[in-house]
Image 1 (cartoon, rainbow, N blue to C red):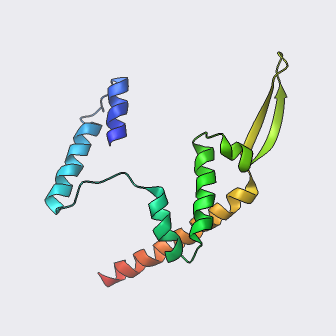
Image 2: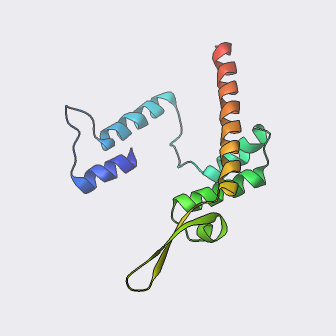
Length: 135
């Protein structure tokens, strides 16, 4: 909701139809958390989540983290995944003699990540079902 609030501030947008703003939703969530006695939330740390989730799903922490870092770096526009984990798909010559190269994430890098995600989601579903039946 913080990012939503920032976007609304940047754009001057207000929800239509009497809907709450990001700031109002954030305050509502904080009040509920306080009522439940929950500590203030911190930003999720993907690396820490992977350190716990990978072994719980029977996966190698090192391999999962390496695959995640490459995909995350690629998604966030970092230059190193283009050098390390991508495949060139096209080269376009410009009128000025400069060439532009289009890259995509290398399927040999992407495929393991998708498999790791699938396995972890299956384990999550299994745990959810066990907990749901226990209630």
